[in-house]
Image (tube, rainbow, N blue to C red; front, side, top):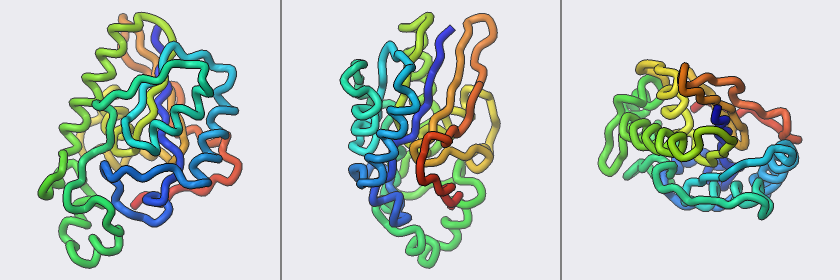
Length: 209
């Protein structure tokens, strides 16, 4: 059995200010650093064989804090955030006011959303799921962690559970939360924990926008 911890990074300025993040490389803010330390405290008795991280700073720094130098961190491009093209680093209110039709699509069926320079959620799901399968092939048993982003985690969780579209808003993953998925060769994936946040000292549920 392989146990996989799916971890969302700590808070960044982009999260705090309700910006579309995408691959804009926001670092953790002070609260995000504190959240990562809360994660480390919660997971301190868990021994990971490896930790994989998105290359973006908010994820890789979260991974470094969780590891505390105990576990090797591998930067995996396939777990980077979705590319959002023209929306990156734009306030959500700006998109809502200037592109109401696209905003409505984002709020209802983002799987169908396509804008210049954007990577589709379908493509995010394919690359992240393929990367997860490759990881499982390397570790027939053990425990691994993946530190990544909301718009990677939601398609990935939908993929492992075979949830059809529209799935994005059926799954909620908070900042600095973690979920656990187990993989057994004879029966595939089982989700055993979803969106765990009890380690966060000042938890405020993220808006679902």
